[in-house]
Length: 162
View (cartoon, rainbow, N blue to C red):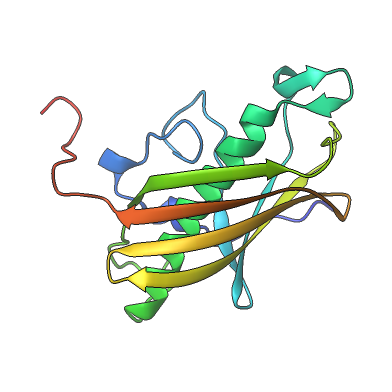
């Protein structure tokens, strides 16, 4: 049975901010990355689609970067939500983050056709800024590692059409 994230922070994002191509649940063409807690670390599990091919048998690096990016912002949202005394699915408004910095190192080619597992460690560096270190595994093998600095979404981000 394939492992899944049951309680993802992305499920609780307000509709106006749930359109991200990587993790937005309302973007029908997007990846629908889902990030949740696993102990004190965060996890996102995603199986690349056929169009995410770099070379036959291997995943396109841009997808890996997108996975690290959305895993990072989702992890920061989870951490701040927990710091505020909440968990995904408890009916409270969730914080939403955007990426201030993204860095990805590709450790080895990522095989296609298997679930990828991003595992994150979150560190608060300011009340509105968090750093997430992420590692991406395929079949237990480390394929990429990255760092995301995520900031609380600024109030200047408006609803669609405003």
